Image (cartoon, rainbow, N blue to C red; front, side, top):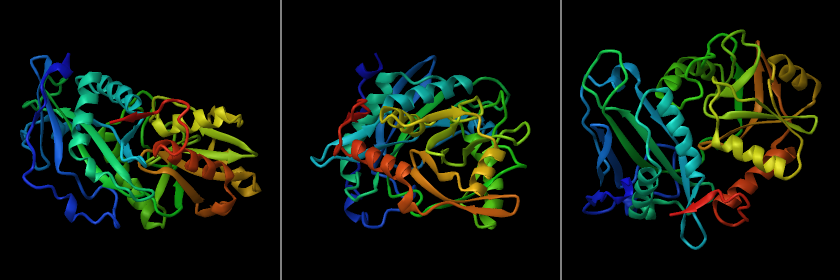
Length: 354
């Protein structure tokens, strides 16, 4: 078993946590004292280690640099009222990580390696978990090719790492999004369902154009005809139309979000009417124009529940009802936050104590 291998730990001489300003936590700009690393060589995982956070060495010929031969995940740890570290649905992220690994021809990560590396790393850097409302410890596992070969082929050697980052809210205010009808995030038969770096690299330029027009993100549409809504740049998307929670059904061009699944599970548990199906651009625009669109929001690990205040389409912005009137999204946010922080019951056993 991987976990039987000893994880070598090299501690920092002095933690930086005392110098960190927990009252002002931007997303993704600060990292904890340590990081985990493991090497896949000769068909096996070995050299498990926790070392001080810092620069790493990679070959200039690595396929990671040339062909985006890499995948990643994102999940969060929360501090309970008793001081425990609570991690939200880590095995769901592992399952998605390994689905991505299979699609990208990377080595899969065994459950015991994944869980023990996270457990040891969080135990070492536990004081970095914020206590502030809305803040958490973001966990970023990632896997990339360590080959030294620039030919096109499946890689043989890999490096697996985990880094930790104290974070605040990804979106502190409601977001404005634009329905994208020219550029494509992912096409049928591609890698859209995998959490791989190339998907995100391809989305940066269209998102930048939208930001110059005053939008925070895009609502991506299908690559074939731009007829159906798929997802947003950093999250899955949901609509409340005539008291029904509606979200695009999963395809191989949509990332299967952990928060998406959690929201749908809660909604069905509460007896809400839920529809996972194709959602056309036409339906969305007509619902906005007629007032039948009661709410629209994004769901994701970073964003959690992100209210959408306006949707742009063909030069026109459609404004949604005020945040205070959004009973669906507000209830979902409060319930999820309560479960994650251990202040509300966890009926689905989502939280793992570390």
